[in-house]
Image (tube, rainbow over all chains, first blue to last red; front, side):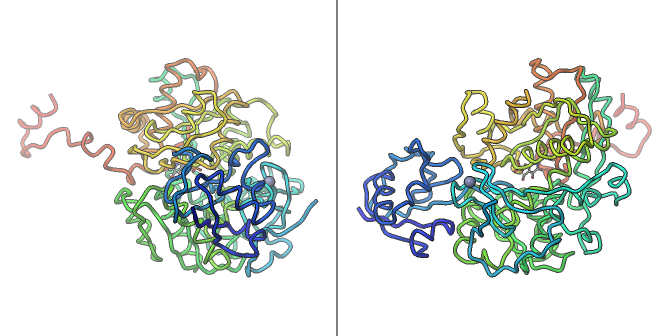
Length: 91
Length: 425
Ligand SMILES: Cc1ncc(COP(=O)(O)O)c(C=O)c1O
Ligand SMILES: [Zn+2]
C-alpha cells in the first residue's frame, strides 16, 4: 500500500532535500522499514535503540497521533499521509 | 565542542554579544552542541535544544542596580547587554504576595503567591516573549508568530506592536473571548484554527518546516530555546524577593511543561553562581484533571506520557501532548515534589478562595495551582511547615466565564434604607 510521508527539515539531508516521499507498508512499522531501506539511516533517527519511536518525535497517520492508536502497529491504509514532527514545548 | 548548524536558513548570522552570555545551543537529551541559530530540535535525537552559557561573574549588587523588570537578570539571559535601550514590554518584577490569610485558612505556616497577572498583558508569557523578540531581532526576522492556548498570542501581538515587528498568531478557534480580544487588539493577524492546541501546534511546526522558518520567528517553535529562557526569571525573582533564598517548595502549573523546567534551571543556576545557598527545594506540578497527561504518568509510575484530548475550563493549560512532560516528571521526582491535578469544580473553588482570602483574581491556571496546593496540603503530600510559593500565571479577567455564574451581586434593591437593611441582614 502506497503512502506518503512528510519529512521534517532536520531529516531532509537523508531524502536529498525532499519534503515528502512515498513509501509502502500495511503498518507504520513496515512503512518506516521501507523508508530506511530507501534512505539508509533515517530509521535510527526516528526510532531509538530499543526500536520505539523516540520520545521527542510525534508521528501522525492522517490527523491521529499514533500514540492514540497502536503506535508502530498503527495501520497505514493506501493513500495515508504520515507526518513526522519534532515535539515543541511552550504555548 | 561539536559545532554545526541544524537547518538551512537565510536568517542573519549571530554576532558576538548579540546573545550576551549564551555561547551555544545544546541538546537536553544527548548533549550535542550547535551554533546559536533559529533551531530547536537536535538532528541526532530530536531532543529539545537549550541555551548553553558561559557566565561571567554576577553579583547580587550588580543585579540590584538593574531595572525593576526581567532585564535586571540580563547577565543570565541570551540577550545583549544593551537590551534595555530597545523598545520592549519590560515585563517582570511582579509581586510576591505574602498570603497569610490563605495560609491560615489552609493551615500552612509560610505561603507566598508569585502573582504574574501583573505583567503587561496579564500573564507570565510576557517574560518568554521578551527574550524571543530579542532573538527575532538578532536573526533579522520581520514577523513574530506562535501557536498559543491564548495568553502567548496576546503577549506576542503586544510585544510585536511595541518592537515594530509584524505579528501573525495561531490559536484554537474556541478560546475565551478575552483572550481572543487581547490577541487581536494589538494588531497583526490572528488565525483561529478548528481544533485543539495540539492541532495548532502541529500545524505551525509543519508551516515552519515547509514555508516560513527562514523568515518568521515562531516564538515557541524555531525561537523556542531563547523563548523558554524567559521563564527562568520567575525563579530568579522568587529567590531575590525572598531575600536571596530559594523557597522549600514551589507549585507550578503545567501545560507543555516548559515553564516548570526553566524554573528548575533558574534555581540551579543561582546555586551554581553562588547567589543563593545550596539547599534542597521541591517542585510540584499542577494540572487540570481534564488535561492531566503528566499527572497520570506520575501517578502510574511511568516515564512515558500518553497524550490526551483535553476537556477542561483551564484552556491555557490544555495541551494534551506536553513536549516537556518527561522533564516535569524527572524534576518532580528528583526534587521530591509531586504532580497533582484538580477538577474544574475545584479550579473554580480555588479561584474564589484566592480572591476571597488575598484579593488576587486568578485565571483558571491560577485556580489550578491554588487548587493543587489545597489538595496537596489535605493529602499530607505538601509539608505545611515548609516555606511555600505558589504561582499565579494569569489574570482572572481573561477567564471571567469560569466564575461568572457564581460571582453575582449580593442583592439588587431599590435605593431605600429599608430595602438595604433587609438585604444585608
Ligand atoms: C497562564 C498560563 N500558565 C501556565 C502555562 C503553562 O506553561 P507551559 O506550557 O510552559 O507549561 C500557560 C501556557 O500557555 C499559561 O497560559
Ligand atoms: Zn540530541
